[in-house]
Amino acid sequence: MKKRLNPANALQFIKSGDTLLVGGFGLSGTPLTLIDELVKSDKENLTVISNNLGEEGKGLGKLLVAGKLKKAKGSYFTTNRDAVKAWSKGELEIELIPQGTLAEAIRCGGAGIGGFYTKTGAGTKLAEGKEEKVIDGESYIFEKAIKGDVAIIKALKADTLGNLIYDKTARNFNPVMATAAKVVIAEVDEVVEAGSFTPEEVVTPHLYVDYVVVNQYVKKGGRYIESI
Amino acid sequence: MSLSDRIKIAKRVAQELKEGEIVNLGVGIPTIIPDYLDDKKVYLQSENGLLGMGPTPSDDDIDMDLISASKKPVSMDKGASLFDSSDSFLMIRGGHIDTAVLGALQVDETGEVANWAVPGETILGVGGAMDLVAGARRMIIASMHLSKDGSPKIVKKLSFPSSGTRKADMIVTEHAVFQFLEGKMYLIETLSDVSIEALREMTDAEFHVLEKTKVETN
Image (cartoon, rainbow over all chains, first blue to last red; front, side, top):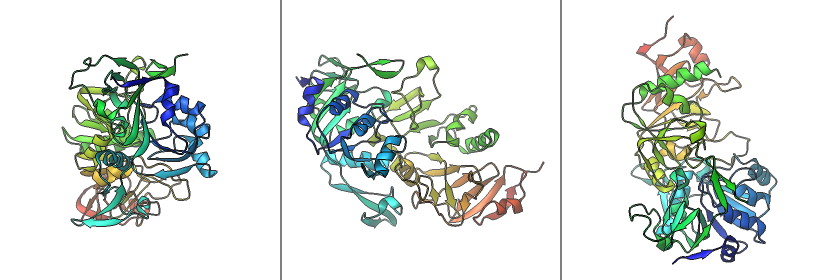
């Protein structure tokens, strides 16, 4: 049985200065409860690798406002004006990479691959400082794999072994992030008995998942809202 | 930018898409193309992990865990499939998307596209723009002919940051359809009553006119 933790206890695996892989595309598929716990905690100087920084005051946006972040690495930060402000004031480092490069770099991190050459970004500003290589007449740039100290991800349900299933497009970066960190904590809506999912349904097999936390949000009108 | 111009562009791009194609639509004008496909069936891929994206649902059916890459609620067509971001970009970067229809800030006369950043402004977002430019089998640019300040968007040389060395195949604006062949830009059709001379004035890039070019006449 995979260790069930309450949200506050899950934080013992995260240290100040850690690099966190955080699942989600905007607010969909984001571990909102674990983020709330981080906001309340004394952890700081965190580097977050995530596609976005949530929205203003929501999801990872809360962590930013709480001053917990040193750096964000991802593909799209302009929709959160707080991120743009923090960056212009020099309060937040940002490293921008194309979304597909982000996904592939994390996949490599989880697969024991050191890096890869991609055509995406070759010849652009985002290739500055990166090794270029011509393969079969086309320009590629080298991208290093990404790994995290801890991954905090969101799935729809876990079974008692830690197998995970996801909800529609809330899957996004979560399965790949589950493979690429030393400790993986999955936030879920519900834990069910092993055997409740058919083997074909399982998207993330339990070997990737270390701990499971049940979230404190409920879904109403198609959105997660705080349940208290 | 008038709605009728946007619809005109969307309709013309819709004609370019073939029955059964796998298509990824960028933000802006491309998002309204599905309204003008009539009976033609194409399969829309959304880079956040969905193939078979359907129309905006009714308010009662909105689920913010079923969204487009612009984070707007969508639905799923019959036969849709869901996958994670790394599979999604495997499709995009590996050449498995037939056509990407993208907006642009600028396109140069060889077809090189700038669609992610404005010089002098903070550059904090790229999303999937460069992945689509590098990886889609065919790239169609759907854009207004001029930028909001009236300056040409189709230029000799990009002054905005490039999205990649891979060139566009076609540009559709409210005035014209251009095709790129071997690094040269050809006018293949006009979509308004603009004369070729007037078109040259509002197009900084040099383009060639084919004898068979269809010129709209009223």
